[in-house]
Structure formats: C-alpha cells, structure tokens
Length: 383
Image (cartoon, one colour):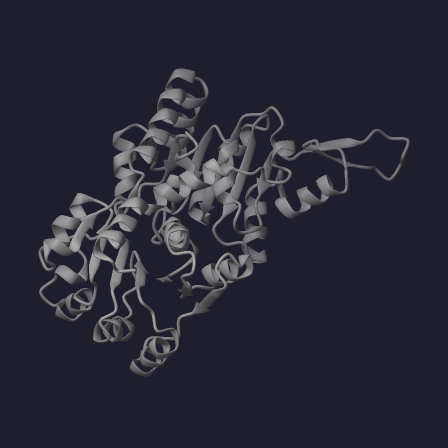
C-alpha cells in the first residue's frame, strides 16, 4: 500500500485491519512519500514493513516490484507515480485506488490531459468517495471499474472514538471550563482567534498547530501570551505538582504573596494526539481554510458530536459542503464573524446541541466504505 502521508494512511487503516482479519498470514508492505507518515507509523510497529517509496523512475519501479512481488496493490486517494503504476500494470498486478475524489477542473479531464488519463488506465478498480466523482471519472473510465464506497476516513474516526483513551494532562488543564479545540492550524487561522481567546480567560483553548517546529511554536506562543506548551504542562502533571491552570511565580521576597498568571491556552507540541483532543471540546475549529494548503480533516472533530468551524476555502472538500448543508459545520470569513457564531453557540444550548448531533450523524451515516472494499476483494478473489 502506498500513501502520501499520515492522513492518507489513517484513512486506509481500517481496510488494512479488515484484510488482516480475513488473511492473518498476509504480509503488508506500506510505503510513504512524507516523513510525517513514515516516521510515526514506523515507530508504532503495527505494520513492520514500512518504507519510503524510492523516487519515481523506470529503474526504481522495476527493482521495487522485483523485491516486494506484491499480490495486490492499494493506492490511497492521490499521488500518481507514473513509472510505478505502469510497472504494476505491466505485471498484471491488481491495483485499487482507495477513497479518491475527482473534479471537473482536474488535469485528467482537460484536452491536454492524455498523459494523465493514461496513468488512470493502470488501475484495476476505483473506490471513489461520492457520486460526483463517479460522474466525472466515468467520462474516461468504464463505469464497471468504479464503485462509490464513501470515505474510509469515516470508518477510521469511528474506530478512534470507540477505542478512545484519555490524553495525559488534558482533563487537568480543562477543569470545569468550557473548552474549544483548534486543530491543524496555520498562522492565518490563529490570527482569527487571538482576540476571542484573550477576551475569555474563563474558558480553555487547546491549539494543535499543523507545524510544530520550534520557530512556529514560538510564534504561536507570542500570539497567545497566556499559553503553555503541552510538553511543559505534562511535566507538571508527572512531577505531581498541583494540577491547576494557575502557574504560580514566587517573588524574590518570600514574605510577599505569590502572584498567579492564568494560562487558558494549551499549545500542543507533538503529533498524533489531535484526533483524541477533539473529545474534550464543546466547539471545534479545523485549520487550513484560510490558506492554499486546503482544509484539514473535519471528520476527526465531527465524529465526537461537536460542531466544526473552518475558514472560507473548502471547495475541494465535498464533506465540508455537505456538513454545512446539514448544519454540522459552519464556515467563517473573518474574526468578527467567528466571534458572532461562537457567542451564539455558547449562549444557545439548543442550537449547540442541534449542530453537535448533525455533525455526528453525518459521519455515522457515511460509514461502511471499508466493508464495501473488503466485499469487493472477496467477490473478485483478488486475495
């Protein structure tokens, strides 16, 4: 199985688990392009054969296939590696595309896209996320090779909720306060929140930036001065210091009273906990909607039954459009609009409950993609 990064791996993990249940003696080889996927999955050792896929070339593709000798290849969502896909087709190895999305503005459907259309012809079968994708794809691919399966991410986030484990130190940080979790944020996202966070010291805010290098973490801390890094906070918990959100600073003169500085904002400086952090929120925010990188995974938040807020750039995310339509999500254009919506939700329990239920129902309604893929594998004897 090849996937670009960690998000794509998590998307297809339920399929791998189900294949392992059906074929417990099968050997799995997982390849990545991005270090964020490779390093985390390699360290977890759930799947022992984890590698970077050597860069795309005719020689690399031939050598890789000679070594791995796959019986079945799964490709996740995108990343069309020309020489690898051609080598797989040349060897008549079943090749499935999992959870892909197709839109009319993609190069496959342009008059100059013959090279890319030829790449798509390498696939044995496509499992697409929605009907619109099928309508586009069947313009150039036989409809018999296309199945609308839904998004395997729905299965994955449901698995996470059903196997939920607490995140160390989060309960202690939140206390009895209302909590908002902001996940996968970029600088443009964080800028929309600075005023509201400063105006609400009684609430607790958890920010999980998309980039966690020291330079960006310092920048986030500067924007939210009443904040503490998660690594620092958990040290206090581990060292059995009082688990309050007041960090006490002793004055030089011990006879003077101590002064308390409220820390109402927790900045997550690790990777891998975000999908569980949404559990603690009453309202969630997902980043990427104010920049060119695109909106991040909103299903991770919605599955807990929490309304999701994000920026205006979500046209590549059909689930964002559908969740807005069913009232489980809200798109905002600027900080004033964000604060207006937050105040409405925080002061109207009926509205908050309605949107929370809508978000959760959307995810569960769209579950089952993994079972459809496994059924296909059984019916076609591809394993």
